[in-house]
Image (cartoon, rainbow over all chains, first blue to last red; front, side, top):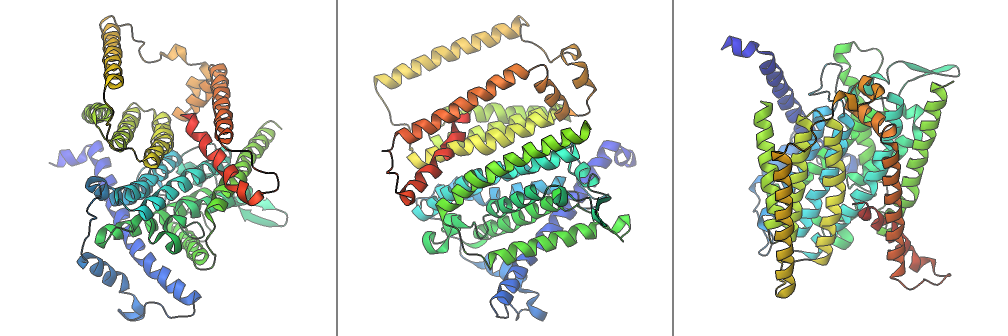
Length: 341
Length: 198
């Protein structure tokens, strides 16, 4: 028995599982409280208190919400495609959770450092489209179908610019591994009399802005939340969903926001790098930057109006994509010039 | 362990590929094709071809199949209700071509004519020295296989331009002083382009 546990393969598998379970529950906990923060921030922006009755400062609100959702009646439309109707909510959550396997939270806390970590994230985010498209199609409802088609078109369009904007970072870091990318951002960058941290947001500002805009579009959040535009499509792709299946889409949206924010932190904001803290506590920097970015997501949602659909498509294809391509070209030329000077 | 995983993913791959052609509902067929692509990617990963495996998911499962799904949803295709001589002819041709393919495969396997994995000599010295799979693919692509790579990109470019021309040719030329009406048309044109990349 002891010999079995001392086997290195078993050790790797065991500690891998422990890390997966820890990350899974931490992320689910964070997501539950993100809904609370969203409502608090929305309340603050709209000059009202927000949820404040369940527990001190309304802190137990997420538990009340979950309980309520579990007890709701579950309804499936009569002519829906039952199998796909069940699969779609699962597909909404799993890809976002899977990406967390490659996110480096701290110097010693990452589930697995694969040498193509960034591609894992891109692959998983590209699979997220299926959930929305299938949910819209299987509900057998015209509003849901329109919402699903819109979301699929939107995600495909913005994925290109998203992928291209990461190429500048890859060129500078010389690796697709997210741990290597974080390591490449340690140290400082001389900038006149100041010393900036060597984060890629300073060397790749254009890519950062493109990535951030695409992140809003990929997570289907305002100002790009057309797939679920209430004023024209009722609830969008999840119109027909109720109870915990509806909650899964909600969970998926927040999980996607968390995933894409942590990838932004890793790629552009230096990951766990930061001053003053010892190495064992550097993960606090990661979480600090992560929550600052998530606050930005919520701030934007409650302050900006929604785009019109053709504006959204034209912006993605005619503005973001060419700029991202030019950025790749300029970064490539700069890397070549610096390397051959 | 690796063998168990390989057998599992190979079984999923074979079953889902069969279901792609055997299922009557086009949408379900397309979804089984996605599953087939994903299990193929898993087999690439087991062979330590991480780059190819994940690009397989990004390009085929994540982009091209979504566009297929799109078309199926837009056309609202139901069950395959076609019948008569056309269908019989198509089925017959399918069986014939399938039989030829199976015979070819059997011949290749029994005669050991199938090329094995690339030998170390096939890699250039620079690529062999590079660390990691992605670098090796990149170095080979831009040295030994540069010409096929460029030809492929030109073919894709031609297909893209062709798609735009076809998409625009279907509509009446918009009057010059109607920017509001022509905006959705121009927005739709590049949208069709990646579909032709397939």
